[in-house]
Image 1 (cartoon, one colour):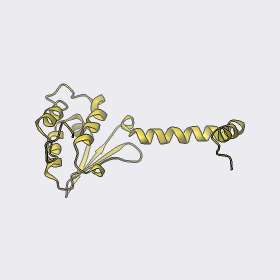
Image 2: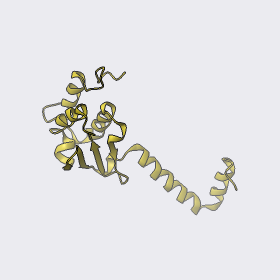
Image 3: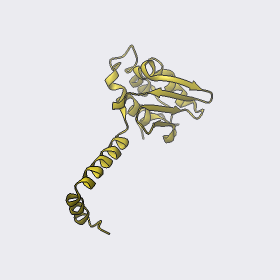
Length: 140
């Protein structure tokens, strides 16, 4: 069970306290801690697919799906660096859109980009490429 959620899955007092550390009144009100804040939000958010970083890594979408526990989190976010520096729009139904800096890319997106770059370099060097294929038993 998540230490930041109550029995019904709502953010508990400990979660609210932690969120408030990222507000203008807290000790974690720093731009470089926005990725950490996003990870924390993900850990207490109801509905896993309600928070996503866009493909290019420069945007964040948060969807509450109308759940009041998620709305509590949104209320707390409104005085964080994420909100003050990145909020772009809110649409009816609990949909929030943010602009992020390049360095906030999701780790999975960064890994995919690195693999693609490695693959291109590998293909440029055909002997290394064939050696790689042979080593991993991928030759066709």
